[in-house]
Length: 179
Image (cartoon, rainbow, N blue to C red):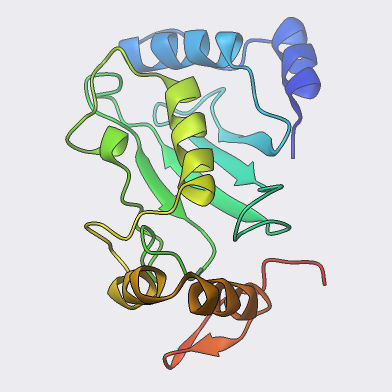
């Protein structure tokens, strides 16, 4: 995974993206101004020669229910970016009210609240925020939301179990911790 300094070095040695279209031009500008929080890492999967850029963002929350977990998201930018948000998918099966077991993410800025004024920095902060401020309102994973709304203690226990790779409500979750 690239850290911010590695991205900056790469940017100085060669262009990250071709700037032949609006998507790549805007994404190039977003990457250039991106300030990653210390609990995130960005990896460019496709970018230099591909018309549909693909990034991977890894989030390692250092507080809250998901502390010590490692969660990877795929960000796929189509030719409509920035008029439309990128498609974001969590690559880990995790127990979270706003992420379903297929990796779909419920984040308002990736749907109804998206505007072209939002950028990659907004998406990174939004994804990090998902792990720090849990919401049981309008969930994708209804069982996780019900547990969260009913008992924070039970929710914390279920999150810890699932992060270790356990089965919760007959669903096997991915191990996302090193312990």
